[in-house]
Image (cartoon, rainbow over all chains, first blue to last red; front, side, top):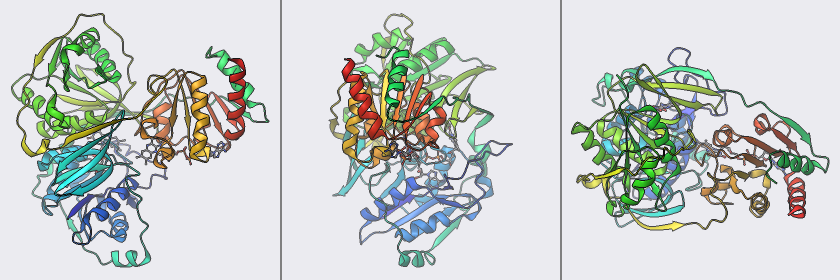
Length: 257
Length: 323
Ligand SMILES: Cc1cc2nc3c(=O)[nH]c(=O)nc-3n(C[C@H](O)[C@H](O)[C@H](O)COP(=O)(O)OP(=O)(O)OC[C@H]3O[C@@H](n4cnc5c(N)ncnc54)[C@H](O)[C@@H]3O)c2cc1C
Ligand SMILES: Cc1cc2nc3c(=O)[nH]c(=O)nc-3n(C[C@H](O)[C@H](O)[C@H](O)COP(=O)(O)OP(=O)(O)OC[C@H]3O[C@@H](n4cnc5c(N)ncnc54)[C@H](O)[C@@H]3O)c2cc1C
């Protein structure tokens, strides 16, 4: 089975994030890494593709960034498509979905995997927008995925527990963290990744018009960014064996006991 | 351009609208003259009373959808309605699993963008602007749509209070769900419901949450015991959900539940930004953590620098002695 895994490359979440002072978008100029959320998708894709299939990565990222893709290729993905173009600056979730959809159409996979939400933008809507644009069904919030007889079976998280959902291929599935344990790339994998093909495409290559993407295509804008009201730190007590008494007092003050 | 009409997606659970739907109706009726609720899953007549009470004049009902996942069908029905000329200024969608599916599909069908993770709404110059808490809630971003309406807003739980307006039941209108072909092929085979005792996590007055600092799955019993003694609900950080110690339904945070209890007690939780966004709205916060530098202390009214394995058993014992 051939699987496309959407692989977002993001600024290191450990570094303090910054917004562009003029347009208020996330600054993504430094080195980018594979979003942890997508490492689960890559692993899931590799397991489902099996020996007779392969995983193709699809990513949209600025400045021809491939560091994150190399990580996923080192895990075992066969090849990657990267869409990178100045015109994509400021693209919103729907625009991103349009770009990813055009790239995925070139591969014509049996299954598309994405994360339920990214770590940096976390709108969580891109994969479903993508599914609609591709004319595919989708199952979101998968915590377990198996494929059998041309159908995918998913345990889908719900408010109350989970649903067993069945869906014919091809389709889009979004996976949650913990769906599978991502492998660490082996040394051999890292070496092999260096020579795996990464096809680089522009907006024009995809047949999209520049005004469907970028700031213009977004049709939404940030009007202001202000610091949130701070929640001041309160009293700090170091436990000397009697801290529970202070908690009891606090509960009494709140009339909870 | 004024705001005349708002549609609110009123997802249901256990035969009642989810709390966020009532919060959104409350907010919608303060911003628009005409408020319509959208329901699916059957039993619309039974929901119309509550929906009317919270501000809906009309309920658009899509019927039971025959076990299909609602996303593509609800989106297609609403898109058709909008294209036929019945156009709201905004559509409010609760941040739920199905809500996000519907919003994404509807956005692609209508070719309009979505603003997600909304935590506040304001009206300015006759248009809606949404507020988003970013970077762990340290910054508030205000955003607006610049293109054609309707604006689709996916709004987080507990962003607004739910207040009854005391109105009568809404009138129910049935909308036909168009045939959409392959996109709606995903169907639910079976539902699994987890056992729960005590109040719901997102409705409880007291929430006691545990994190990786508990050390092992069996120590979560301390958290549950404390929650029980305080008539509260037990929550968790994602770290211990991913580790399989507790089911996902306990998770508090960006990808879990948003809670706004009177008191939140964080036990062995570091206070990562993604956790903080789900609980910072609590009226009071107590944190127990052995690391004095843990970020959770920056939001705690009472911070206990100590070992959960020492503090919790004593606290539980003291509470038991009082009851
Ligand atoms: C704080 C913040 C708030 C934002 N709010 C909004 C908003 O309300 N509405 C809006 O339209 N945009 C918003 N954006 C912009 C949005 O994040 C970007 O448009 C982004 O390109 C796509 O959305 P996402 O990261 O939120 O994706 P999500 O929908 O959260 O991503 C889910 C999954 O889709 C796949 N995916 C997403 N993007 C890519 C990619 N570039 N390459 C490969 N796979 C990908 C990945 O598997 C990813 O895990 C926001 C950005 C930030 C930083
Ligand atoms: C896209 C995305 C979404 C996420 N969504 C969520 C979410 O919804 N909810 C969420 O919670 N997280 C979420 N996370 C994960 C989050 O970033 C943190 O990894 C997680 O919250 C950490 O959980 P923790 O505090 O239990 O563990 P840790 O960060 O490991 O903290 C454990 C704490 O316990 C303390 N400790 C250790 N031993 C003891 C002891 N004996 N007594 C007292 N204290 C002790 C330590 O000092 C430490 O502070 C998300 C991450 C991403 C990338």
